[in-house]
Image (cartoon, rainbow, N blue to C red):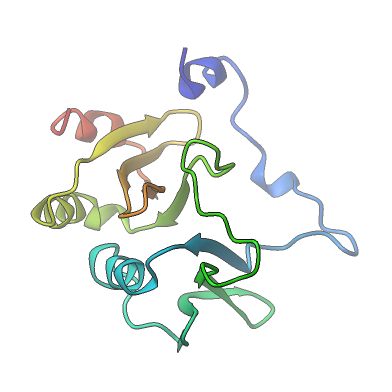
Length: 164
């Protein structure tokens, strides 16, 4: 049974019902990923994922801007090279707590993104999350992290059938 199957019978989530009182989280501000090959990962996220040029690029850390998050804060995706830190023992994808992370794209760009990512030799997986009408494609980065590109698309299930 998939996530979609288990939630089909439940109500669509009430995104407007999120907490909004003092101290409530308003939006994602930053997602930071530990990497072992910063130059390769920087190039992958810049050129293959399509995040463009970093907004901050330093010896052991690269910041990609994702647009305004909340209250003037820029949402960022960050790559940290911790390989020289005391006690560093490496990254084990079998033991990571990250399942995957997603970047939103425009529904009109979905098919073009499929072709562009395939031209980079990536193996793609597709999903449609019926409970929220999200169309997704998944692939792995050079260090084995699962990346999702996702968009709202009420007709995405039928569209994805072309790629299955």
